[in-house]
Amino acid sequence: MSYLWYFNTSGRLAPAFRDCHRGPMTEVEVRMSLPFVTLESLEMLRVYLLESIVDTDLMAVRTRESVLRVVNSLIGPAVPSVYATRDSVQALICEKRRSTDIDTAIRATPVSYIKGVQQLLTYNITQPTIDLILGALESNSPIMRVAGRCAVVLLCTLIEMDAQT
Image (tube, rainbow, N blue to C red; front, side, top):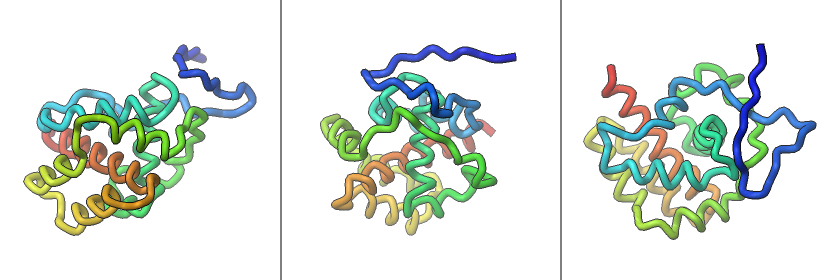
């Protein structure tokens, strides 16, 4: 059985000869695609990030790229429970955007990821993890700033998942 996925891009098409990621989504990615309920005040962080992260509206690609930005950065060790095996993070994101473009798009939004990460202290996120993410958010590197924003949304997603159980 095969499926055909339709999605729109903002001008960049995935090359036909490349095996681009189209799912399936992991449990974390599925939860990341849903609005925050427990952390409702941080919902706009999730929305702005997922709208800016890739050049497609396919949620499986948006959420996977967000998680990959964290797992493949210096922040990755702070979330070892996200993926049990390294194989599950092997995905080619063909619609990937440059970190400078994502950083510029998100920086123009009225929400503060730094204020958002400070709220995570009330949810048993350790101070060293908070410090690591704050360091990334305040970094001179757009790559680290984007990874820090993705980490905030990922940690919020994990809190949302814990609240459901």
